[in-house]
Image (cartoon, rainbow, N blue to C red; front, side):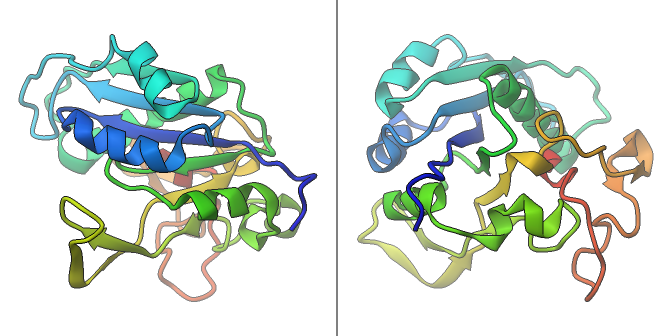
Length: 222
């Protein structure tokens, strides 16, 4: 424990047509913890179905709900070839821009989540003040498989009293600002493939291979 660390946490998620009760439940757990929160709302679904912006004008209401500064960004992409997870990844990249505009620094922590994913308040307080190798840039220099702090979470339906039996999840994820593109000082990982989206071998293309180093510089662009 080191109260002097006092890491700031910046939250980022995509937002669409989730019921407000979901955001109220998440906000009740994390109220006042985040230094800033960025939501990104798209003009199309992953399968390219058009949709109206419904949340982007409600930043003030979300800020009051979360007890933190909130920005809700509009994402417009009319490229019909960008669908499914590719579209989701592009939309998530806008979160990084929002974090930078909100003043995120290399020593801060970025928390990338879905709107229905929520760490416990106690865990977030530990992230702010405890020593984690994942969050120690001097140890990994953004070149280690331990740079992404992933979580192992329970899955419940509608209420924490209805926990799904035998089902777990491995998100949301956190990464120190040193290793986030546009925040830290490392160059982006080299990319290959269509749209230069996939990290090159040795930089995360095969994160499951033992000993394969990867640069989490691109991990925050997932």
